[in-house]
Image (cartoon, rainbow, N blue to C red; front, side, top):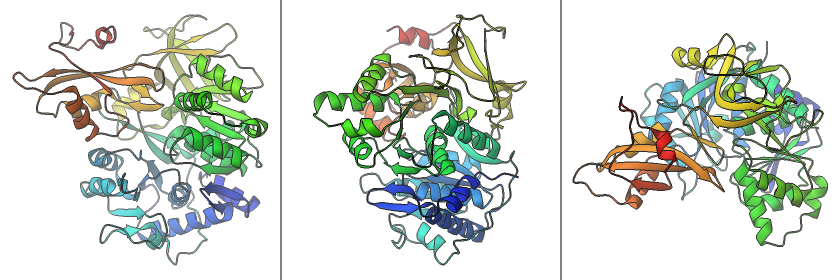
Length: 516
């Protein structure tokens, strides 16, 4: 029997009074986080949530995230973490597709009313029975009449709870991931998948109880969830939470809290370099304390990596992973060595092979699709056996990424077989963007691609053919798309054209668009 909430429970016993999470000027101990998670578990049980039920969660990097996350696990439920940037229709899709029985959503702010957006999505989803608004303070009422709050759910509940016994093969998380055809798919990750990946991640970064993590990557993303949050819970390390990246704020927190572990996507490293280039900021104390810097989500440009390492006199470790891999697949492991530009070597218990289009293993130095198998491979895509069968064959998961292995066994990601765009470390699915754009009355056809960008890694570019007799400016189409899709997904570059290159079968040749 294995329940992932054991990570928190064990540290709550060993390090009861030690600070687990700090947000702004407030801190909560491991015992407090565990007690609050137990209250959430009681509240969910009162709502009728049973073992195996799915519960969705939309929340910034706040202590409420690990509290609710572990409360769901303790109740025997499956966590469905959602991006805080999703709009109402997207939320409805995820709630419906995951069969969520309940949905926790942070209220947001006046400028970013994600609670109202979440409630709209919930109202469209008949099968989702309960909506719980997360308020900044537990005693605050919901701004929507009749809507239950997290505070009222937890009120008068016991801080003790007998965690439901789950099997190691039971689904702990359904996390939505890449889909270049159709909408995002829910990868089912088991308690075992996530537990083993947490343990090996702790080993990879040499995590200790005295470490201090700065978590600015969103915890609804698998990278931050496992490699930062769960690893800290497992080892009894302290986590400093920051809901949104800002270079100056990050530097101040690194300095103030004597942070030892930092993880970011390439745009964050770029932003920190850029800030230090333009400002006189004393980083001497940061350099004394910082011992581990991790990068993932997309390849870190070598000039960015080298400049950061020059500033902080530290080695940045890159790895390769994906949601379907729980997530870590390869890593630059200190006991083996690091190669700049490489994603390292397979982590413990994971096998890798590179194959050509015929499925034959390629030689060293030759390009091939990266396949992997091991403890980290997902159970499958939720309610999607066809997509699962295409992705996992004989235990080998087809990543869709093209890689090269050098003579020392290090892997380098060189291309992607999928059209998926990675903008600032976040996945964007072209077809989803195209479908939104084509709802505009002036748009006849849209083709979306990713183009190289120095800051974001990739930027979203759309080629649009207008309906005959219709007129629309690029700015108008951009604002329309922005209003109907998560903010990171709308195209920043739009080209209005009369024709799109197509094959004889009518397929848009995006390869030709990339040459423009």
